Image 1 (cartoon, helix red, strand yellow):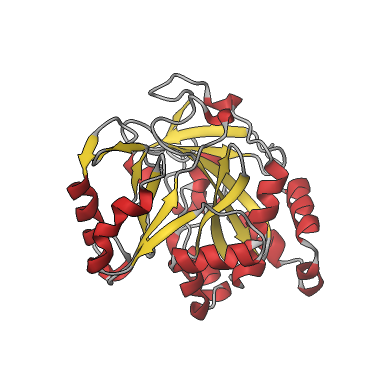
Image 2 (cartoon, one colour):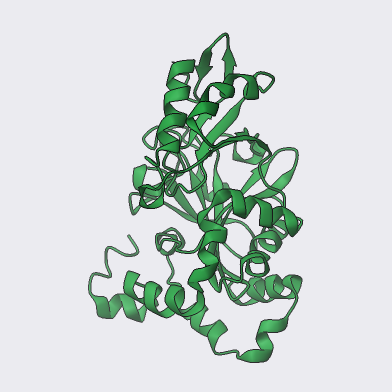
Length: 320
């Protein structure tokens, strides 16, 4: 019960826990130029810039931009086993529809629920209307190939793809966690909806601790898998790609959301200019000491290569 015992602001500050105002003013406001936001708030732009820098991304099947194109969805996915529909400007996992298989107009969700072609078309219509998007603005629907996640995550996630979030500051990875879906989260890797957050040691890629609804958990509630046995494969490669998000976007403080595909390895799922703070709970540690450590290193420190930055973080941010 790491944080439940730290009720007062004074004690939280002593542990280096960063609050919302500190994040917004001292890091997002100070290090993130607002004119860079469109690169990460629009997933299509993020995908294009990530590919430009040589990072793997989920394969795009197509884009539906207008109501007149909605009925094209059947032809677009006709030869696909599974696919994902997501709003280009969505946030917090809203509006993501995952289909694992389909046949003769019946579409199967990860839970086994079958929906009709009309249901799929209605979802796309809602996406175009901005129902799931930042600020409710009109949007476009991205259709992507489904990710076949790495076997390492078998039994660690329930009916959904686990993702790894890495907080990047000035190009350095400072803290990481993996988000594991549950039945309660409806197969989504969203902590507010009941997914599990597992802190990951930057140095080794191994689990630190798990939490669900801010309460420590030792096993996955649906599979009974012991969480602290989790070790992320291709960890250094994943950190390298996540850290390169600094070069991709020019944002000083951001969250890089990664997935591990069975065939293609680590890939960029999306980038976030306003990453949440729950990662501190999952790691049982505050962000501020790590951020300030990097800030105090000065100008020359910024110009290391990506590989050198990853190695430096692994040396200095090892979990005790």
